Image: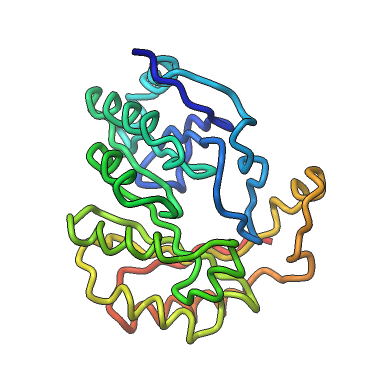
Length: 249
């Protein structure tokens, strides 16, 4: 049986979405409408390109030596990969057959039973938690944070290695009380390998204009290095393994 999926694009030598050099697949379709999304062109499920798992694997294995040398692998991002669970499950299964490390970059906004079958073939999860506060999360994304937090708890239960990603947006997610709320939620998790504090950037705002979407963050500045350091220090206070990204202007 040929399994097909819809993807937005591919990147052959990525270095920021998991360990080592990685082949990154950006899937098409997303249930969230994040105010700071830099890939709003991935939102619509019917856009993008249809591709089979066989076609993807044929492309991925060309870079196997680079991935193996660097401790890298394949990362599937989006959009939201878990909107296409059978496609991602089969892709990851085939990757593992070829000795290739697999990483899933997800918002976690999916029914847990759907995620479980994909997680069987996932070596690392990059979990984007927009905010622990339900009102802020709803304002940022248009959806509830309950599925995301439920998935986070499940990943800890099954001891699945996780990198937590938190985007620091001035006037939206940079309030120390919000950062502290997430840190307190995560403090007893034993599966977290890294927390990444990612500074909000404006590199995708031109896409919103091209697509005719209303962009609400035109006047929102990028965070300062000091703001990033303050957020990092809160996670450190809870003895969590945290890194702060460089501010992109």
